[in-house]
Length: 172
Image (cartoon, rainbow, N blue to C red):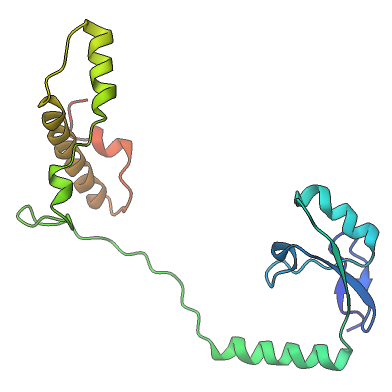
C-alpha cells in the first residue's frame, strides 16, 4: 500500500501523514461519498458540479499506515459478522370478494372527484348546472373501476396499479 487515497478530482495519490482537504458540506464528506482533495485547486474544481450554496475546504491530516491498516481490519471484521440478505419479491394474494381491504371506512364515503372542476367542465361543455349528488355517483364509479384494476394488478403479481389494469376489463 503506497498511498492512503486518491484525490477525488485529479486522481493523484494522497500520501500517508500528509495534508488533504474535505468539502464542508456533509453530503460530500459523508461515509458513502468521502470526497478528499489533494489541493485547494482540486477542491475548487469540485464546486461547480456540486452546486453548493456555501462550501469551504477543511484541511485534515491523513492517517499513518498503521492506523489505516487497523481501521481496515476493523471494517473487515464488522462486515463478516453482519449478515446481508438479498431482498425477496413477495406476491400479494388476491383478497376474497367478501373481505374489504380498506383500513378505514372513511375512504368508502369520501368524495374522490374534485367537485369544482367537475362543475366547471359541465358548465363549459354544455352550459348546464350540476346536482350535488353527481360527485357521490362518480366517486362510486371510480371506486368500482379502481377495485377492478387492483385485482388485475394482483393477478399479475404487482403491487403497482397501472393504466393497463383499467383497460383489461373496463369499458374505457
